[in-house]
Length: 111
Length: 120
Image (tube, rainbow over all chains, first blue to last red; front, side):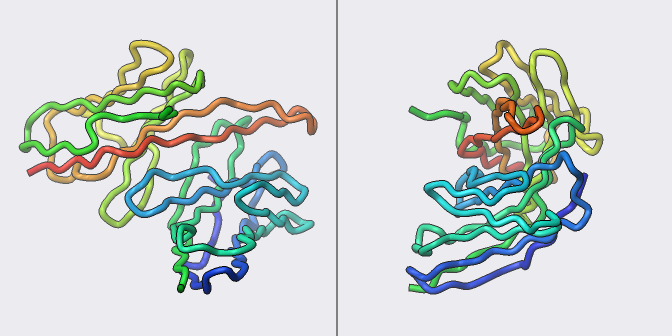
């Protein structure tokens, strides 16, 4: 499975933007970049995914480097509810690999 | 409506017992999964299953077995429970989405709330 590297933890002030980085230097051409998050005592939830172009949805934005070896999840205004562990995952359905969650980034939002 | 549900939410049992955790999804997805999250919060896939194929993570003991009575359900049976089986177990489901970009495909997984299993 292609692996990702994320910082173990990050902090952000409430209502400020947060940029969560992810390195995936061994990404293949058919890997999609997925982001999930896990709030305390809950199951993981989908945040966003992309292949080559930047993506926006109601939860976040995903900025993908031109060489696809890194990406950044952007939360435009962090709220206390965004405190969670954020996982960056590479997913290649064609290859049949499984979701590999890694250790993720634990985001703390400071009021 | 809950998309992916699991029962029970908590399960406390003695070593050596056999137990089951149930999972149901009402999303019409064709693939379901079981994950284990240990005390260090590391989330690891155990099985993925659709009506055609069961994929088993090779590290999963054969005391664990998935049972799918129909497309919407994937139950997890555990025989001869051990202390190390204590963890939170998550069920998930997904449906492969066809991309207009060169026919590539990906999927989005929807997770249940988890079952906290404690083996005494």
